[in-house]
Image (cartoon, rainbow, N blue to C red; front, side, top):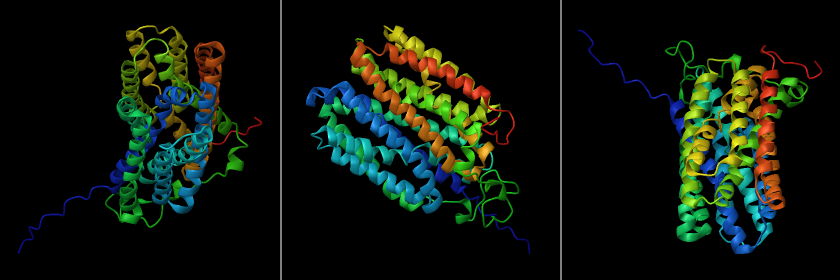
Length: 422
């Protein structure tokens, strides 16, 4: 008698569930990070605080956001993705909820600067890097690009929403809504997040012989580990960290904090400026996904050099943007390059130091990114107060962009470590 039993339907690779959940959390965290653009002018109006005072609080938050990167890498190694993401979401939700009752500047420093800073840092693209390395054997650059696109989508969705909520119910209503979003993501994270494909009886997506039995441990080639002390003795580490310092200076710190106030002070309405920034976020999705695809196929060093040069040119043109069409052109050109640097930077970190080291070492490279962002966030406010506009700040970012391009091009072509003293 023949057996006509149909084969069981193929199981959905759990990697996609982990990827979707991580991308959603990254989206929400990136959306929360857009808040300073919306809050600067309302806080000035309500409390009479100066631009440098508010910018300093933003800089504190960015610095702690950066420290959240290596913290997340270490926590993931010790406690796992699920617990790390849960704690990060809880910190963000609590910090934002308490921020609704803000009355003094020190509360802004503590709640936005410390609680939200560390919480969002634990939910940044370090998590995306770890998920890509653990759950995917191929197309890792594309997955990192997808995670970057999720962060860009957070900007695209949250910023116009927060502008509209602020106009309708004040900045406290906008902050309270963001707190609710972060809190709502805690339960699905607890229920669905997993650490390794082997926990659900599957392989990393794209692994050889997918029909074979799942391995009980991560592949040996993914376990090469480099300590921070060893990495810090190499030129490669400092070139990557130095270029990422500039990346932070030219994105989260300057443009991410001061672009909206700059456009409002040059005659654009909040709706027009918010629409342009949302367009920048949409272009960011396209650019980051394209960068992930390119980083799987081309020399990542030259991709980075091109991205930083491209960004430098666009920022240098920003002080001369005086009409709506110019603002849209800037949004498109700059937006394509906003997070495009992330996939090749993560790939280079993994190639040179081992995939098992990505969470920890990329966390510290990401910290350099946020140190640059903190410097730019504060310096931008100081220069605006001293000189009356942001032109000098934008020109400084353009100059540093070309420096970062030089750093990237100076990385050696070989995969092995390059000693710092060479």
